[in-house]
Length: 273
Image (cartoon, rainbow, N blue to C red; front, side, top):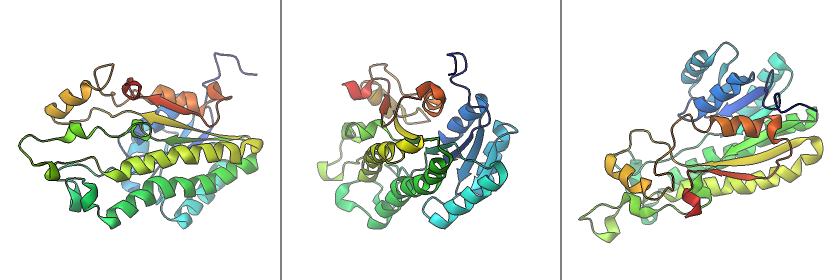
């Protein structure tokens, strides 16, 4: 039995972070590295993945991964087994989050009435189906080993509905008001169901699964948006980009060895109100 001093140690553990070159993915990878683990920054953009890995440290590895294609996942699994002979942690972090506004694509206002089926299907493919496929391939390997951890990165919007007042614009008619798109809520809520399923599926094989529900990260949003959302959060601010690192280490390490099927909210208290 490890002492309290050592339960956060991830020395030598191989951790795959999907969407690892993204805003939070690189933070998850850095946290794993800081506690001795071997972060595998897996991303559709291999160049970015390798650059992020180099910025983290010598043990980090960048690799191309398309979570929508089982053959890509199988190839990454086989690559890692040849190199390390094991896979210990999977962080299902990859997701699409279409934006409200000019960069929102075909449905820049995010309204359900104008939902683009192709965009919606891609959100599901990356954020939900991709998590299922990665869990299938990497989780099965963990089960064969007799231990492992799957951490699904959900959202506070898996616990509460988007507050559409955050996106409201003065002077616009009601039928033209921008909205947070439906896909994000559907995907992140689905990850909670996947977490509970996985928590019972391989439990006898030493594989446990939990979900982290982070709140939004302050990252250059317009001042008017920040002013509105701060009123919805008891801590009166959005998260800083590195504030989820401690929770990730806890949920991936032996510090949470008796947690399985849990949903951890870390949102400044927003889901309490």
